[in-house]
Image (cartoon, rainbow, N blue to C red; front, side):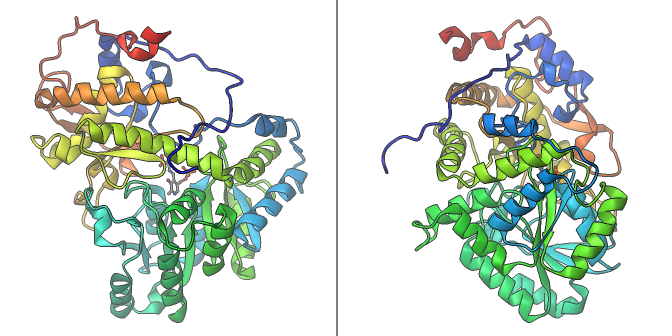
Length: 484
Ligand code: F0G
């Protein structure tokens, strides 16, 4: 089938109307939200590309599964279904459900980390690193250098740099490294995969030194798709075959099922070690709920078990990643600087290259996110210096080399026409980029600041220096609407 187009392997059974707003309305909304798209009301959003987390469309099978919820407090049959599905596809012995990914990260970090430990990882993820630091560890980035270069075309930018890892082991000693945190399809690098070969070599090196490896397998099936596409001798293998092999090298994983798992809520911790599992069950009871529901309703676990099974389907992944590629290629053709190669769950715009006139201290990516929202009502997310936060020890802003805007695609939600409208909006902002002014903090929370921080433009009331409130341009001019 090479050379032929992909199409969605489903048809639409139910629709949710989208709300269109005026530019004036949006300019007011973003001011009220402190120029932070996390603080917008979703009712004020047209196309929501904030995240692929919990925003996916469930299948009719999953909705039917909700009706099979066994809401017994203990020993729900839906837990048994989930446990059997996770064992089948991930291969780990013990499964502890959690309300979402960070619940699993919290439990794992509390069990394994001692104060002053170092936890290496292939780039940080915000909540993962936060929980490691909360437990007393220092996070050490051991991803390959190419991951920090938006223009590098390396096919596996998620790979671990084994030399960096060896240097860390030499300098702190293996006994101060409780585990390596290995993220599949690295989110903050732009949705970039790890190769099977690198995963194998990384796990081997760690195990030689008695260091465990825990995967962040949140987007593991998307990573498997890329391995199949890009790694020699893997193109004939199925996603489940590759996933089982990846997991066979590791000691366990944390998962936010709100992504790959195509559900609105849910996650799990899976491990092979009996002692860690026992302690994890104990902590689960304290922080999440009984170890057979982990903060979830029985019906949520049923939807998760079905969603995980659906995510193993090659046609699903081809269409999912194909849609991200479609958006990325159109943006690149329009001359917009984006991260290459195009990632699995999102297209990342290089805001530093888009807005070279705005210094990092004035948050170019946060500015661009606000400008795209004002232009069209499309909501995206900053992944740059605001997300990087402050150094735990010094209190200084972490210098993030990547200053990105993430256009994240929920699974099975939007159509190709929505992608076209998105490209038009980004192009429109690109044409006005000289008019954009940067932002400053008006409120900065102490933890995971990107979620709740508030900003104001360096001058004026809009990030568009010349914006006048009487502009009535609406998204109704978009070709999506003029076609209907
Ligand atoms: N790990 C990765 C790689 C993630 O992308 C996320 C969440 C988590 C862990 C935490 O999972 O949200 O279920 O607690 N990422 C979302 C995002 C928030 O928008 O990228 P959670």
